[in-house]
Image (cartoon, rainbow, N blue to C red; front, top):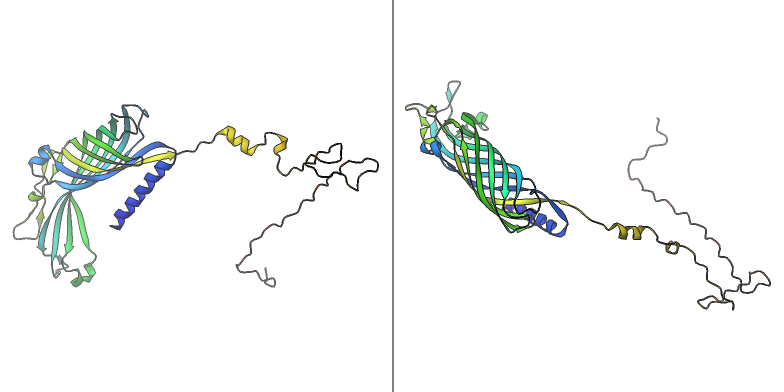
Length: 330
């Protein structure tokens, strides 16, 4: 719950930031859930469906603002395609039977790393955007075995042991596409749903029901794998966070008027001598005659002296650290 709240706060912050600043789109990050459904020959051998998660990145739309535009990016898919437990497995170490025994869990998983190109049919900024994805990459189908002790407290030297081995592994090239729709909630956030289908090359796969325990023993047999086409259907829902490059624009003419004086009259701290008139008074009505003027020249104003600049003290930071002893050697 705390993690979900953190994600919501982050998304709200990104959305608010996107609305209050100038920006240029730089792409988007997507995350969501998928329901993985094996197809074709993989479906015929009853390979299990499963729930997974996907991540993706897409570049900005090109050409920008065009009614039909495209993006490029990449996508990662993960899915857990079922588990099967085998209980009461007897574990023997150096001739000693460990109390409580163990449980063996067989798990099928799928992982895909796919390059993608997206074709959008509406310009940037549209509320609803239908799209088509073109996909090419690879998918892995793997069967894992995990052995866990049932009574770890009675086997302290094995308490932390949880052994996982990869039993069957297939990596095959896949290609295909997606059809979906994007609904833009705000400038920085949108919802997305799609259906994806990829065609896979032939490889080995092991359905969970074909994993068996050898009768009368503790051995688990993984020999019933089959060589089949590895097509896959994904039903996706999720959201997309839009990334932006922010910018600020300043009018150079206005900026120049603030930093450079347009005339000498705008010089800061300039002393302006009062203008004298024929009757000995300045334009503002004050008497401009002084006793220190030259005799016989009434009405002449005295020249103000240039103020002596005050030398300001340079602030220093008081050190609270250790002081070096003047009597110390070195």
